[in-house]
Image 1 (cartoon, rainbow, N blue to C red):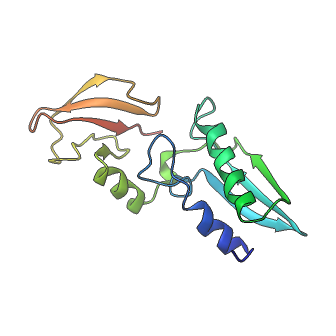
Image 2 (cartoon, rainbow, N blue to C red):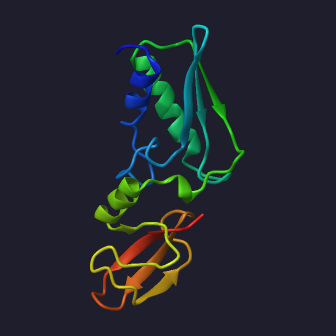
Amino acid sequence: MEISTAAIWESLKTIPDPEIPAVSIVDLGIVRNVEFNDDQLKITITPTYSGCPAFSFMKEEIIRHLESAGIFNYQIDTSLAPPWTTDWMSDSVKAKLKEAGIAPPSHKVECPQCESQNVDVISEFGSTACKALYKCNECSEIFHHFKQI
């Protein structure tokens, strides 16, 4: 692998979010910055929320990718400010979530299968703290909604 910031970004795009494998850690905006300071690579990452249990796993995956490419002179910094927000998600990322059966963040929750807004909350917490569990009253589908943060 060519060692450039563009190549590093491309490599990081292959790391799926461990809780939502339909999108990468770059797609979600967890990877904030990639830069070289002299000959040291510096990567800045931000958790989706401060208590995210998958964050250490994501950091380990970044390290694994770097070291498997022969990159050992790196620093990974965690930045909590500004805090991560779903506003960082692009429309293409939201489309990937919907294709995976997860309602993307929105104030109007819509079933990812039939697009009905006639839905009920089953639980404010789904398989992860950033998702809630819903049921569609039109198609009877049970689905996760990625919370608007």
